[in-house]
Image 1 (cartoon, rainbow, N blue to C red):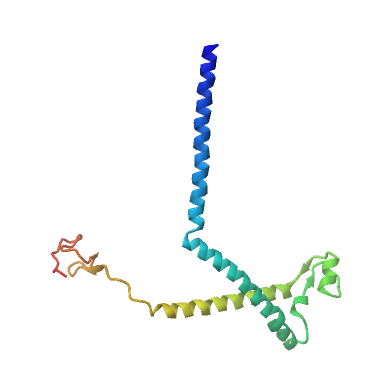
Image 2: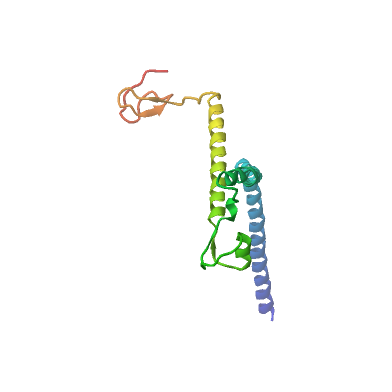
Length: 173
């Protein structure tokens, strides 16, 4: 009986050790996630996604409320979103009527509007990146840490006294 009790105690200690390690791993996992989530790049990405979503709403409103009605007026007082082809070869009074009838439709007007949304967003992002790149030229130049070997034209550290590639002695800097 004493032997069984001893085995039970050993198993309990083993389980306690395993549970303790697993619990500790969970704590480390949470700590690692916290470090990851609080890094600058992740926070910058989160801010970018939130601003991008808000910007997307503005662009969608611009396209839906200003550009597309103007474009529709140019093509003959038609709402481009209402343009569709019924694939079942039936005639429907409107896009909504075709959708309520659950007819298979090819909504090419909506597709064209989404393409226009994308083009506008891409153009605005291009302009913003172009502007940011122009501003980056005003930053301090990068610190030079390498030089070129006069003998073999390899890149070597600035403090090197001999080229690591051709072993040419270099003049002191």
